[in-house]
Length: 417
Image (tube, rainbow, N blue to C red):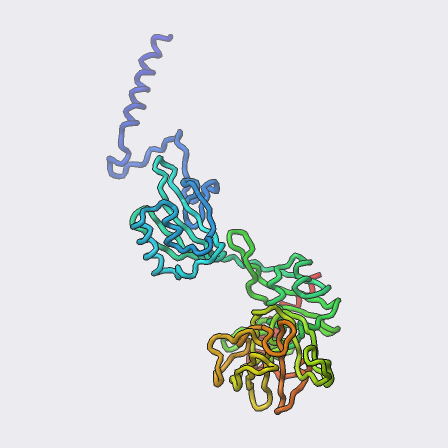
């Protein structure tokens, strides 16, 4: 029986060998012979064990991380890596055409990617300018500089809180990005005095949180907010009208006013408007016709409305000062600047929120602060009691669409605890 099987086995082996050497594409119309022992590779599968950053497969390199030191520039950093000086100079020159290399920031991170072969050559250099923006230099041949941007993922989020001390501290206490305090102060700048918040004031916000590489990097759009201040609920809804994004209340009235409530973002009031105040330096009782905001030297001061600079100068009492005429009714004054903002001259047109100077203690001042004053029809008035009219509300043709937006957002706001 065994002897009879041997010829059959030989024949089978020869046939398999012959088939193995046949090119399946050698004959027209022939089908591909599938190797059942081979592993099929689906090219659509993303293999997560291959790690990439800045479009560089980092598993293939030794990665060295550094930070920009004082007085370092791009050329100096590249030269310190051991890179050939001519190549480093060419890389610097090429980079200047796609990136402002003079704007490299102290303390920012950069990465060096060295090959894992015996020569261990520098193949890539990446400088991280911001969470999204970076400069990448490919050194695999002639230096190629690329200005790249990481994609931002916007995720819808909500937050809420109750004011305990300052709005900034409240954000920190509730594990909310403190920048939210600034954003809300900008939205409600014309309707809420953020220097006069009460304990127990509450807020709710619907917003976008921005992520890069799964790391939160900032706050994007704010779609809606509710702010309860002094027992009154103030609503804010984002809406685009005539191509301009702004915020409106539930009735379609703009939250933007002709004058900001305060000329700087965060500070405290040390002295209010008064007809009789003991002057801290002169030691005499006399009127104080403005509001003093205590803030560190160098804090930016903003003009509270569009207007024209009508006075700029220095006086013994006011120190460095600026006056801005907004219209036929209102003029505002800003005293004790440490310095003026660039370009501020008599006759300069300024826009609401534009920096016009910086807090200081020039003139009669015991410490750094801003003395802010407002004239209405030529008479000094209390800046904290101004009620300026709003700008254009939602137009009639947009009311229905705006109301649909409001209804949708209100449902989400009510769901926030």
